[in-house]
Image 1 (tube, rainbow, N blue to C red):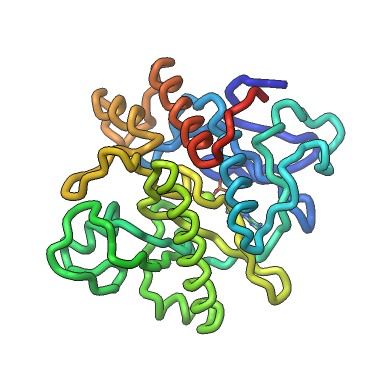
Image 2: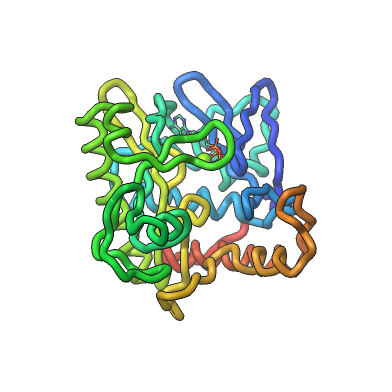
Length: 296
Ligand SMILES: Nc1ncnc2c1ncn2[C@@H]1O[C@H](COP(=O)(O)OP(=O)(O)OP(=O)(O)O)[C@@H](O)[C@H]1O
Ligand SMILES: [Mg+2]
């Protein structure tokens, strides 16, 4: 088994498509999603990988797929059961790889917000709304919303996703699909956030992706991971100020302490910062799943 940091993968005979964090291999009607140890912060992928991060993300998502029971794309995370090409580095892939059904991706980021943070907080300060949804007056930064809200965004080809009003989502995917995905996204968020809360993690907001196979819409991509969500430690939560990030705070604080301007490639992380960050990812896994993180 291999425990070294993996920031780029290759599989013999297959083309790779690289997202910020995952490497994607097309097997026809299935995909291999390989979570690397790449980390992004301030919209940059850092030159330093975080040991175990890819495996933690994959295992957290697999835990949720199982717990939530929502129809989803997962086939297996067991490399022994994957149709890998001859010569594939199974030890490297183990634990970080998801074999899933390939779907036609619904081109909407289904964002659910339970708290007022990030772009939602910015918009609220200007207009009292979040993605056009009117909220009560007098809310402060990171306040818990009375009810979680569904705030779709379009997947921008480059850079930031663009928040859109629900009506625009209806135009893009149709009323029935839009209503269905809003209801299901809110439901999955509510159930997931309640579980996380009971383990000391607040899911401030999260993004789901859905895909179509025939006339079925299923949950795809990663779910309720620190990369697709804003995780806050429940302990010490206090509205009226920004909250520390459960997973990335050491990285952010360290980057802020350097002279890096956020407009050029970021510096490499010191080993100690990478190690502390790794421990937070593992802690998120252990808290959420109640399992001990093993060796791969
Ligand atoms: N079951 C699936 N069927 C089809 N596409 C999928 C499925 N699950 C995930 N995807 C797609 O695979 C990709 C996952 O890669 P990844 O999240 O690393 O990159 P990205 O979303 O392109 O970029 P970003 O770094 O902004 O997240 C996404 O484009 C996602 O929509
Ligand atoms: Mg993505």
